[in-house]
Length: 409
Ligand code: 5CA
Ligand code: ZN
Image (cartoon, rainbow, N blue to C red; front, top):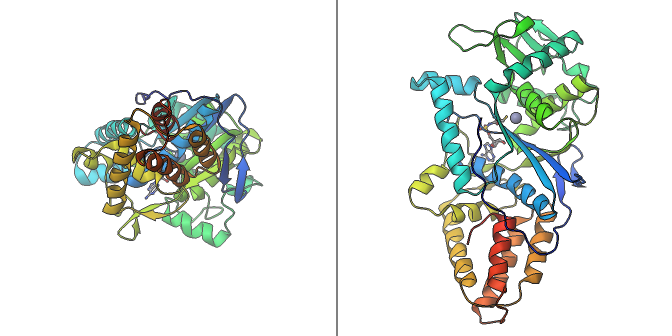
């Protein structure tokens, strides 16, 4: 499927720093060494509702990853999926009486608009689960033929015991895994499974639900984790640099994905770093489509909020923190945007060379966007106080804020 248009990324003088990111698998910071082409897969939406602040925060974090890499003069191969067939989408379609394909198309179109407005760089490959099915079926067949998958009443399950490295992404114990599996789309209590944690690879066709030709698997539809694996292996290959998503994907989604891929290829690791963004809450609870406590990007845009202010509101929080969306967060961002715009519209100011390096250093250090914003605040305050006569400074600040933070001043 098509992605969305890219906003231009201005080139800056000098070169950005090497990125260090927190890796869930090792539990610490790793300096990534991507080579001339950096490869990143970020899990996409399940399009049954509009983009909320939690989604936007997570995608903004990985947008910063791309921007840091681009600033090191690398190319970035970025892949994202759309889970355009899955249980929650079918349930919402049934509840609302909207055809599931129409619902998915409508919400994906809105997501593209939101991403464009927020200046999130698009993936090179934007792939739907449905269009990935012809690539998924042979992977499931291979897992089954290798003895790493088994059939249960027509459904095919992956055997987590087939991967000696299972558990290394999340580092959780069996009890925690079982609990999260039940909460996040798994079925640990289904009788007949070899291990309660085993996830479904292929679901046999159910009455009244869409299904596709699965060759020797029979008609059905793909499981969630194999969807992302098929897309990532097809477009990035094993050992790509970053697997990204919100922290709710560490287990089971990224754990299972890594296992599927490692058993399929015999190689380790699936991704060099598993990077997870914190959860955004509203009124004390994680913002989630299933709970309905949502603030939508599209609603704020419709209300006339400048997308640059939304972006600044998101960047004011460290990507790994869990935080709460409030009206004040947005009010402060609107005020900050105003101060920055006033500052760069002046004819001169203090030299900005050091500021560019400060922004680079902050972002390279596990995407410390709040520190980068504070650095820009300091420059804007000094400029407003009348310091400096460098006529190139306002333009350089504007370009740096655009290139590195994605905010158009
Ligand atoms: N389609 C799957 C991934 S393959 C999925 O999780 N879709 S989603 O629509 O539920 O979420 C899309 C992305 O937003 C995921 O990375 C998820 O971790 C992230 N996300 C969802 N809710 C929040 C939240 N409240 N705060 C931060 N990130 C969130
Ligand atoms: Zn995914």
